[in-house]
Length: 219
Image 1 (cartoon, one colour):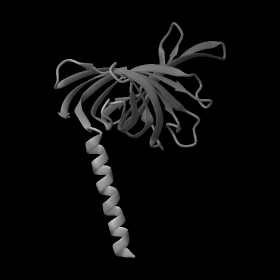
Image 2 (cartoon, rainbow, N blue to C red):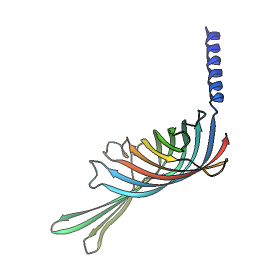
Image 3 (tube, helix red, strand yellow):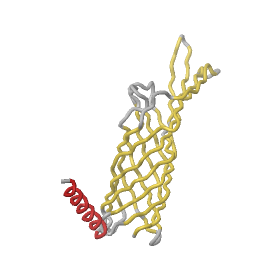
Image 4 (cartoon, rainbow, N blue to C red):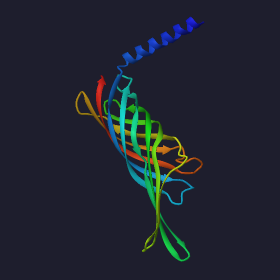
């Protein structure tokens, strides 16, 4: 029985390798830099917020068909900033206060995106999960009397932060500059599926505009 299972596994492996070879497997690798528009939302927030951030990634783009229609983009985001800020006005005992909140949070993320590329055009669409582990997470709060002096300023590390799970989708365009180099601008939306902090209804949605410079290593 064990020998038969080994033969079956070997047979399937040969078929897989053969199919990949016949399908003209291709792979490109390279750096990617992106800019994020982050939307902070949740019922447990006093006020929703937004902010800009940057992402620094390394990606591997693989295609498995002769026309390069079906593929996968995988890689690592070594630094992905999801920061945001918000402001609100409150009144207490006849005094108006301004409360400014700045959340600075960044993740190390694993990228896995399924890719469909329109043959002979270069335009493509991506869809898939992304997992992030926070590298830093801080909340700075500044309370001021409107038109007056500062009342309080604090800066604390966010506690009980969670692993980030995100569903990401969007599209881009493979622009072949030469047989060896491809430039790929891309626009995606990331839907945060988990709370930033445990047991707090607070999540982050992100629009990301990025560009990758990919080098053909298997053509």
